[in-house]
Length: 313
Image (cartoon, rainbow, N blue to C red; front, side, top):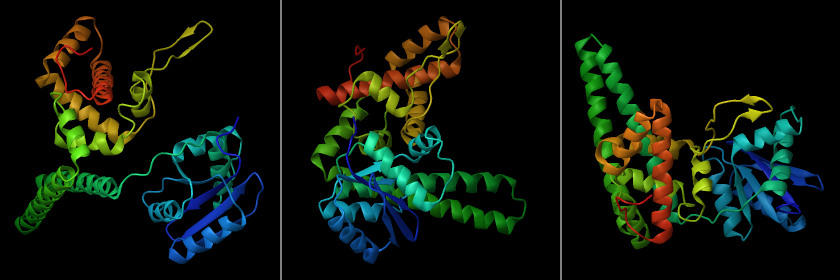
């Protein structure tokens, strides 16, 4: 069974798009610009497919995806790690743009799944969140630099940089709040998520924007999606320790910070941690268990349209 019978895989770089058809073969190379998008759409008229597949490429794919969807094409955006693992499984170790495009097309044909397109407001929120994270990292780096600088003039310059970046963060947060408050559905979901102690405004926005599946998946599936579901490591007589791996890194990082806060301010989570600690569980395992408990509960809250309750399982 396949997901799509005919696909076009597109390898995206900053300046170029390389496309390959599956299973027929053949393709094209065009610029990653408006003229290239038009040429690609003409190619799709001559060679119809069920879906066009691209890897997430740090934003270089975004305008192409928008143009294709606006023209009515079904577009599948794939995780690069999954595509690379698929290529290794197929023993396709050679790597160039044309071969990458063909692997993308084949992977999408077998396993591709189209996600609903995000609204322009959510796309902008996603961009704002990314920039906010970059500003936060820049502030942290500048503060670290400030601690090691001995020269007074350089210290003054770095101090000015910290203040500018901090002001930019505050201004960006105002924009994020305005965008959220302008969308009644999004604002309602953010407020619902914030009702759980430990989930702040930016935590809730991150979940709403970067985890649109929240409330639509089973408890195990949502835990797997962010990489906090334990997997067995057993074979014959070997009984290894269970492990967590993969998932959406930025959501998982955010949830780690939220779990750390929830251990202090959420009575239910605090009691849960104390039980695990009394059972001799290590700190790292406790944190991951808290993350899993939080995301499963948040998933149920969104699914049921209810706010957090202390007695929720």
